[in-house]
Length: 106
Image (tube, rainbow, N blue to C red; front, top):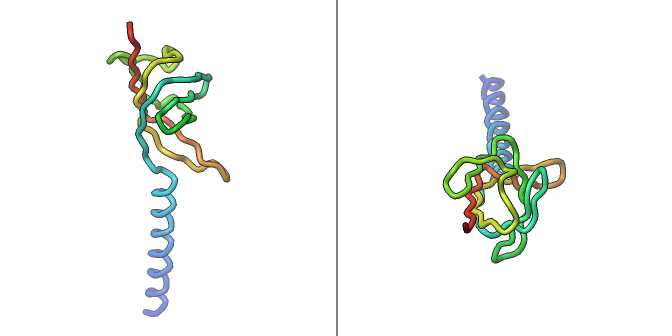
C-alpha cells in the first residue's frame, strides 16, 4: 500500500511539472502595428512599444483586407493585428504567429 501511494505521489508531481512547462512554453499574446520588415520566415512589426520580431509557420493563418492569402502577399507598411504564442527553443524564446490580419489602404 505504501508503494502504491509513493508511485501515485511521483506520478502527480511529474504531471504537475509537465503542465507547468507547457503553460510557460505557450504564452499567448496579441498585438498590432505596421510591418517594418519581411523575411521568408517572419516579420518585424513596429508597435507603440517597439519593434516585435515574429516568426511564421505553414500553420499561420493570414488574411489581407478580409481575404485569406499567403504570407508572401503581405508588404512593408501593411497594418497588422497578430495573435501569437511564445515557444522555447533551447535557451531562447521565439514568438510564433498563429494568425495575422492585415489591412492595406488602396
